[in-house]
Image 1 (cartoon, rainbow, N blue to C red):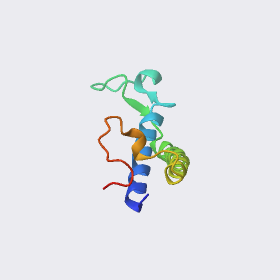
Image 2: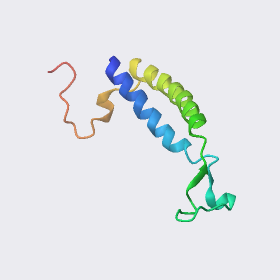
Image 3: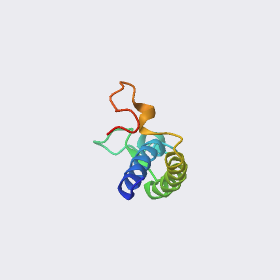
Image 4: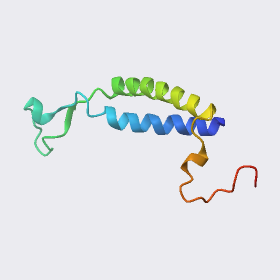
Length: 93
């Protein structure tokens, strides 16, 4: 795995994890009963994005290490996803 693919893998994992972590412990204006006129009741009031970004970074790092190990050990290969037999056989270019 090259450095570029490793960075891209981490970025994809980070954003996917962040989108999963954002809704946890989110307090909306409707939950707190303090709805600002002109806004929706579901608008976040307390979101803790900085803490969630740190949590996301840790989770993504752990997932990245696991996936990096799986990919570099050859447990999963590109050919495992060759469902339409479009890749040439091993050894041919």
